[in-house]
Amino acid sequence: MLEDIAANLTRIRARIEAATAAAGRPPGAARLVAVSKTNPVEAVEAALAAGQRVFGENRVQEAAAKFPQLRAAHPDLRLHIIGPLQTNKARDAVRLADVIETLDRPKLALALMDAMQKEGRRPDLLIQVNTGAEPQKAGILPDETDAFITLCRTTHGLPVIGLMCIPPAEADPAPHFDLLARIAARHGLTTLSMGMSGDFETAIRHGATHVRVGSAIFGARG
Image 1 (cartoon, one colour):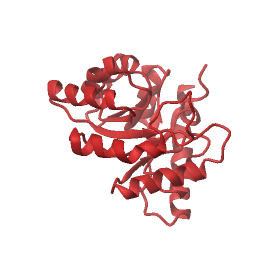
Image 2 (cartoon, rainbow, N blue to C red; image 1 turned 120 degrees about the vertical axis):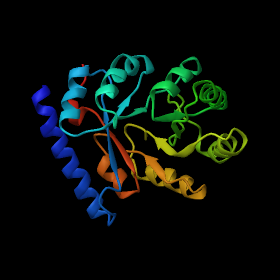
Image 3 (cartoon, rainbow, N blue to C red; image 1 turned 90 degrees about the vertical axis):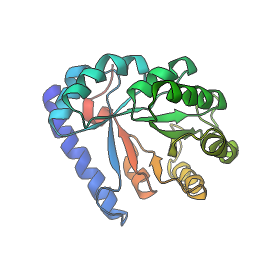
Image 4 (cartoon, rainbow, N blue to C red; image 1 turned 180 degrees about the horizontal axis):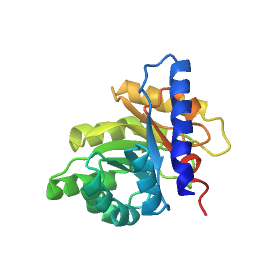
């Protein structure tokens, strides 16, 4: 229900603040990305009215249908693409997004580099790491990540600022968050997008700078 969104945001923000304080981190160290995928424009507008400005969408086509009009009314809105990205959607993603969280393969790195040159925009990029080496899941494998970070940043000159992961659904997420944080530290990357509705407090304890929360704000998706 639209009237619940503001109250849900208040609760999630309070939990983020409490988890940040409990981890001994400064206020604001972890930022909320409200995952609005599959939710209508009206739900995003309700969140905007409650002060939320950072949103995550899985599908470029859905983001394109919702966010240009919303950005016109709210210039400080920031959009993250958080779903698997096809190379043929790279240019649309570069045109729309402020952050693309799912760079995960050399072919996509080349497509994003070409799209940035054509669009004259350079959204921040996060590399998605498949920390559980799950064959059905997107993301670069952990033992390939160091070389891929170097390829993206040094060879292609891409604006990679951090890493993202989605731990296996039934696993303890803490070791996966630790692994991501260690890889990022090796490369001086300061942005860690990790943690969702069920585990974002654990992610904050392990250094998350962005947590992606959808159902706890907008309700369960159909």
